[in-house]
Every structure is written in structure tokens, then in C-alpha cells.
Image (cartoon, rainbow, N blue to C red):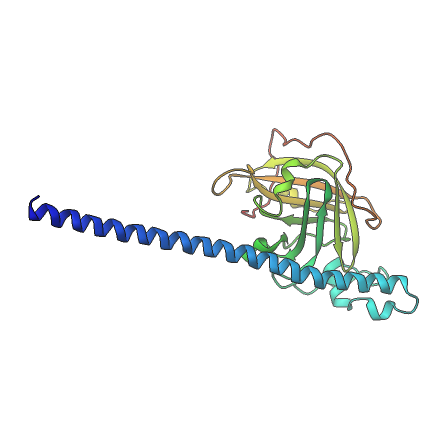
Length: 257
């Protein structure tokens, strides 16, 4: 074999070796980033979930134990930002802005296996860790539309199986609220009318659609529910016909998830 050909093959082999090493390094880096994101999200959910449960137990103890209400009731500022009402039902002054990523409560949809912390905001880190409360929409208990967004491939994956009549439990330090699903629609991402406030307490869940789309999904899947009233007592879910996507999109959230 000519010397020049040997050198050419040697250089090509060296180049391929370095390309192989580079691709392996990129693969390991991506795997590490994904692993970190998963571990961080689960640790955050565990740690903050424990804190939320302790606060909820303190609230329940204050409600059930005579004379303990003053010890367990959260500060007025905390109650305002979680429920838009002060203790006793008196209308509150406009609440101070809630910092991005603050834990507001927990959402559960038992029939489709959804259980997640609810955080303030829709930033990337917030939605990686849980369900985000869409800024500008109502808080739980206030008359209006509570808007929540989540990723279709993590916390809101179960929405693909949602049905009319399914029950949604939303628990905060201001109280526990139960909603019943009215409908689900596939809508355009630039159509935000679905987040508009109505004349009764409602809840709107937003995620990307299609659920198994690779890349940035072109549409949004929206679920609307109304408040039933009273605290949640059990983990059951209503049954009903499937809430199939509407043929004509009407509104959507802007969150890309």
C-alpha cells in the first residue's frame, strides 16, 4: 500500500475517532442535563410538597381545634395571594405580586393520574418543576378564571384522557376547591380568549397539543371546569362522555409547553 494512502487512512481514522469521542461526550452531557432536571424536579416536589402538607395540616388543626385558629391561620398577605380574600370573607386589597416559582398549592385529577404542585408563573424552571399559575388570571376562590399551564410530556400528560365530568381538586392555604370538567378543546396558541374571566369561579388548564408531537407543538389543548363549591372530601372522579377536541378552535394560552 502506498505511503500516501496509508497516511490518508490514518488521518481519516484519527478524525473518526475524535468525532466518535465528541458525539459520546455530547450524549453524556445531554444525559447528565436530563438526569439533573428530573432529579431536581422530583426533589423540589418532595421537599416543597412536605412543607405544603405541614401547612395544610396546621390550617386544618386551626379550623378544627377551638382557640387554635389564630395560631394556624396564615398571615393576611399569604391568604390574599392564595385566595384573593381575607379571613372572614371580607374583600382584600389588591395583593402584592407573587414571586415566580412560589408554591401556591397542589392540583389533583385522580381519574387520569395527575398530581402536581402549583407554582406561580410560567417560566421554564417553574414549568419543569410543576404546574404554573398563568399571571393575570384569577386565584382560587376568586370569581373569575384560574389559568394553569403544564408540560404535555410531564405533569399534564394525563389530560389526553380527560372526560366531561371528571373532578379536579385544587388545594391551597386559602382553602380546598373542587371543579368539574365542562369541556376540552384544541385551540390556536395565539388565541387567549379562553383565559378571560367569566361571571362564576372557573378553572382552565392549558398544555401543548398534539401530546406525542416531536418538537414545539403547533396547537394548545385547553380544559375548562367550573367550581362545585365546598371542600374536597374524597379522591373520586366523575364519569362522563369523552371531552373530545372541538372542531373549530376558539382560544388558547400562549405558554409553549
